[in-house]
Amino acid sequence: ELKVEQNPLFLSMQEGKNYTIYCNYSTTSDRLYWYRQDPGKSLESLFVLLSNGAVKQEGRLMASLDTKARLSTLHITAAVHDLSATYFCAVVPNTGNQFYFGTGTSLTVIP
Amino acid sequence: EAQVTQNPRYLITVTGKKLTVTCSQNMNHEYMSWYRQDPGLGLRQIYYSMNVEVTDKGDVPEGYKVSRKEKRNFPLILESPSPNQTSLYFCASSSYIYNEQFFGPGTRLTVL
Image 1 (tube, each protein chain N blue to C red):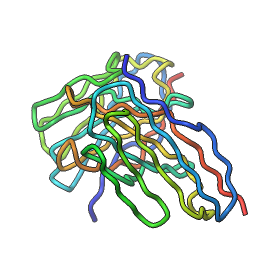
Image 2 (cartoon, each protein chain N blue to C red; image 1 turned 180 degrees about the vertical axis):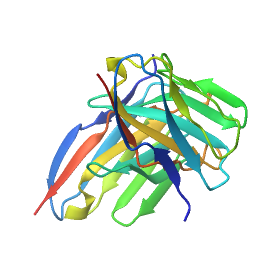
Image 3 (cartoon, chains in turn green, red; image 1 turned 135 degrees about the vertical axis):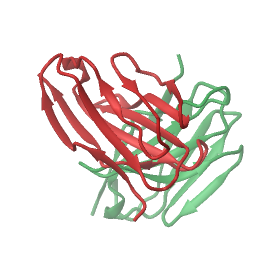
């Protein structure tokens, strides 16, 4: 059974601090996606990572992919309240076309 | 405006009464997909379509049907809904499977 595990599941952090969300997966894949979901809203695409060593940055968020370790990270720099949301990673195995999502990391940034 | 639309947004129905949730995109995307979101389980893919007339099962296809007769539309059909299909449903599309997905606003379904 393919697993996509995110850690932590819940994260409360102070404004201005840095933190990392981890996404581990159990299949061979070099296709990894990060999404954001605000409460009561739909999902918004943040990053698409399609190769080993891929790194992408947008504002205070930076995502990376290590396909050998089957690990992606979402790093938050100098958190601000607007980053409060639930973050999901998703994987597409190299052998298929199906998306597998993690259970999400609920992030709360407090003043 | 480029978007994915779903209808209805909210639906309360009874067990066994057939229903269809529509999904339409105006971006000429090839890949379309349906997900359900349940607390503590993240999103699970129900069905996906690589292109017109090409559909395939996702992780949780039981109790659902789909069709892709036109590129822009990808309806989700529940022929005999049951209470365990109560969930939040999202449709999504992308120009190609490996590109970013655009999600619809969601359909909250309650089956009594």
